[in-house]
Length: 80
Image (cartoon, rainbow, N blue to C red; front, side, top):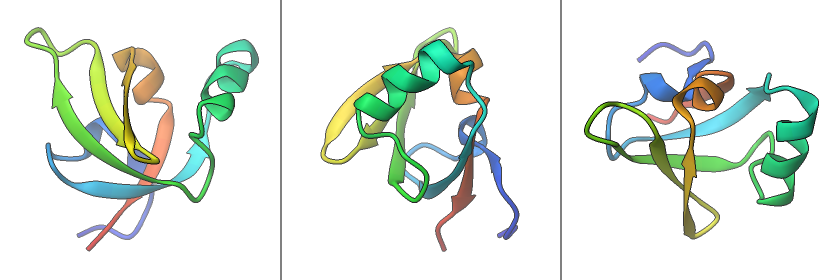
């Protein structure tokens, strides 16, 4: 698997990755940080909605739903 960071949406369903960078706009970034989505946090891609948006992830033991446009701006390093 590639070692470089990739968008969260590039994970396959059921796979995990570690957040390396969050490029979301400041107002939305603050909201994500408050919900525990921080650099260094392990996330799991749970599923995509039927039309691909939104994206559901598991972070810190709970499920979180993000807009696909936001998920694409969260970079992760895939776990092996």
